[in-house]
View 1 (tube, rainbow, N blue to C red):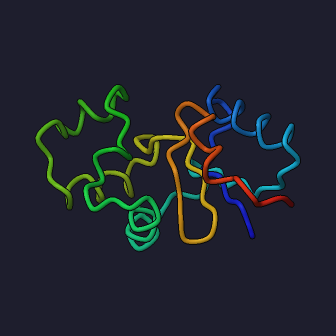
View 2 (cartoon, rainbow, N blue to C red; view 1 turned 90 degrees about the vertical axis):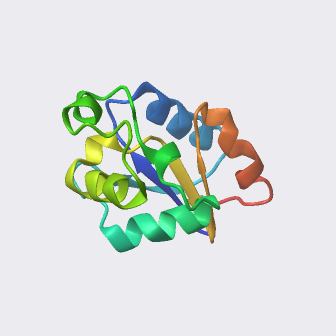
Length: 119
């Protein structure tokens, strides 16, 4: 089963997840979401895989863009639109496996999703 990581090479948690996967023999596809921003349908799909309806856990609240766009009181629609327009707001890393996903912060949070899947 394919593993896909929403990835930013400048992020230490992303690099740690990549190292964890490699150490354990997993092969993954890495999506550099800043270069290939998510679409609205992709975010909706990602929320389903995460088992979420509310996109708040996907949003990096400490990013400058969060304050700049005044998202503290934003609802679902506004948050999703902000993630499409400003992908730097997307929390990372996110690991997808099949129809499931996990926000891998810390990277070890991905381990339950990985059990029983190699290569």
